Length: 283
Ligand code: SF4
Image (tube, rainbow, N blue to C red; front, side, top):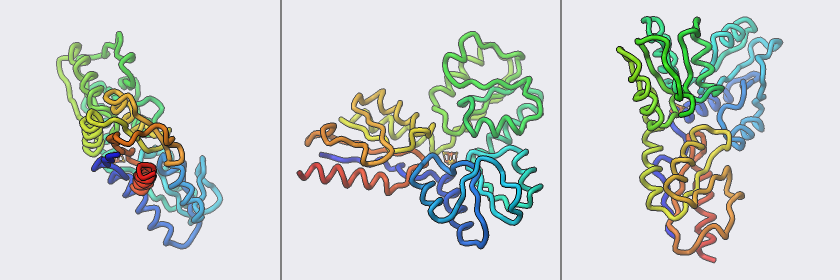
């Protein structure tokens, strides 16, 4: 068996930063809360839990002085306000690339353009962008190609930004379609470069693989996107959260196997899968 590991497997810089900030907070004295799970990865989150971090759905009111860690997808101004009100220390791990999307969305509206957000409706990153806008009457979210069917902007001046982990192909499709109805467009490709490079690498390498193993959280949007890209090129693409989900019979001795991971998957998970495959290969 020949095993190829994508060069961009493991954490992206934004997730690594969020994990580092959490570890740094763990070295401080005091109660630590996490507002929702930091990343879409159960094992990583469980590890933080075992170290004393409490995952909460709502902002704790009665523990002034405690730390509250928020996710890299961004937070709403209401969260910041409540954190202040309840006397908590905010550890805001919002990725700088996500902050850029928030800034550009506001910039587009402030300059009198209609805003189109290319992203997954209901995703935390899109919700955080929307929460920062005061008037949503000139804002549309385009999530799927079917959203484009019959969609016509309200005005002829449109600004477009993207969720950081969207597919470049879909973003380009939206820009192309919207341009048919506009006279003036501001287009900001805010897909983060790490996402683009990861998707591009998977697209290239999966064409030459017999089997692709995509490792990551099932609820992770970027991992699901990598799965879809690989599956398009390689019918034997398998999605797993951990090595225990793999089946020996899915691999043959002469297979070339590509291992890729989502942005919130630790590199050690990829290594565990690799070790297991090498073990099966020797049997
Ligand atoms: S995928 Fe990109 S935008 Fe998202 S957290 Fe990672 S580096 Fe930041």
